[in-house]
Every structure is written in C-alpha cells, then in structure tokens.
Image 1: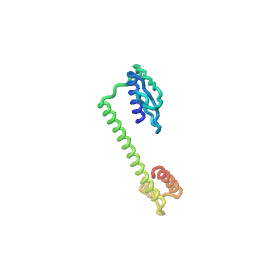
Image 2: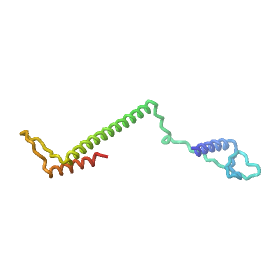
Image 3: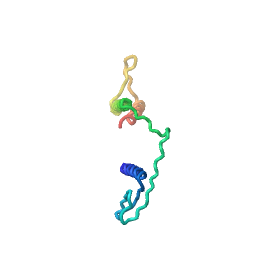
Image 4: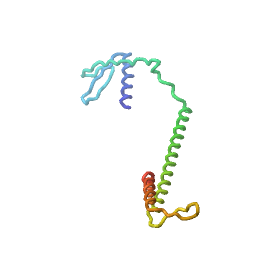
Length: 149
C-alpha cells in the first residue's frame, strides 16, 4: 500500500514537473532516494523522465459500482446461505449423535449375557441364537464406527 502511494505521489510529481521543467533523482549518503525539480547542491543528479500512462480505452473503463441496495441484498443472501448451511450441518450432527446412541445401546444389549428374544405372530418368545447375536453385534458396531466420533 505504501509503495502504491509512493508511486502515485511520484507520478503526480513527475507529471507536474514535466509541465514545469525537469525532474531530478539522486541518492543521499544514507541511501535515501530523492526527487526534485532542481539539482542537489554539490551532488550529481540524474534527469528523471516520467512516462505518462496511456489513456484507458473503453474496454478497460471500470464498471459502475453496485448500489448499496444490491450490496445489501447480496450480503443478506450470503448470510442466509451460510445460516442454512450451518443448520444443515447441525442437523447432520444431531442425526449422527442419535444413530451413535442407538448403536451403542444395541451393542450394550447384545454384549450382555442375558438371553434376548423376540415375540412372534402367535405371541410366543423366540430366543436369539449366538450366531444371530454376533451378526447383529457386528452390524451395530459398523453403525457405531460410522456415527460415533
């Protein structure tokens, strides 16, 4: 930023000096570069030739700035999209937490030594075999691994 301002000052100074006379450039004993319309006393200065910038053609002409209403509308739209994204992210996090809790509860039930059963159409208890218990435990473990973090 400072370099840009210095370059702009230099350009304006050079354009002003071009209209009035010559512009000189010299470096002092501390290494600082100076510009002036007169030569330094006791020092040799080089004549500085500033090249004027070519005028902008119509293709390079900057576009008209957007109105504050358009900027406000864009800002509101951006904020709305960001809030929507955050809500969706929170929803996914909640769903994953619920799935995790369900999987852990099921795993806990399957790992206990107590017999598990289901009630069939006739109202009779059908006890779970060890192979089925292990298969279900493996399925619930996959669910827990996917959703618990």
